[in-house]
Structures are given as C-alpha cells and as structure tokens.
Length: 91
Image (cartoon, rainbow, N blue to C red; front, side, top):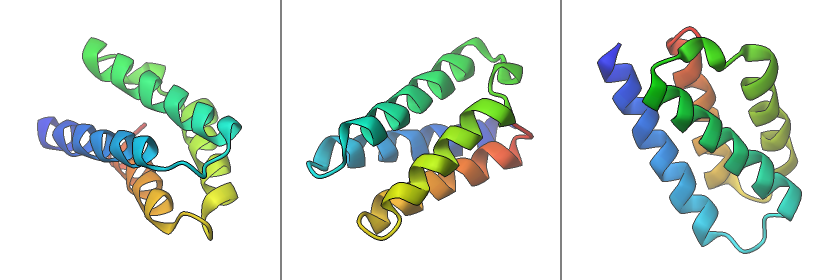
C-alpha cells in the first residue's frame, strides 16, 4: 500500500502543477479539482482512506474530467491516472 500512496501523491502533485499552469480552465472546474485534491491530501495525511468515498470524490473527478477531455488532454490524463490510483487503493 505505501507504494500506491506514493504514486497517488506524485499524481496529485502533477495535477496541482498542471492546474497552476492552466489559464483556460473555467473556475467551476478548477474549484472542483482543487477541492478533490484537498480532500485526497487530507485523507492521505490522516490515513483515513474510508473518507474518500466512491460516491463523492471519484464521481466529482469523473464529472469534471468529461468537461475538459478535448480542451485539456494533459489535465484529463492526470485526472484519469488519479482516478485509477484511487481505484487501485480500493477507494
């Protein structure tokens, strides 16, 4: 599990960097992604993975990813990897 957590943390850092570099993402999408990142980080620091429920976090990520799949393929790829990492952790 520690390797998966490290992979997820690396993906989150990549997502944060990509969000910081993009100027064309609408504010609502940016807010959803930033909230998701905050939620993931808080749970990882507390090691309470149960707080990251499929019904909330992954749904938010999938919904936001659909909005920018064509316009921001790099960001879409990072979000997809984040979703995959969460799934591998059983979240």
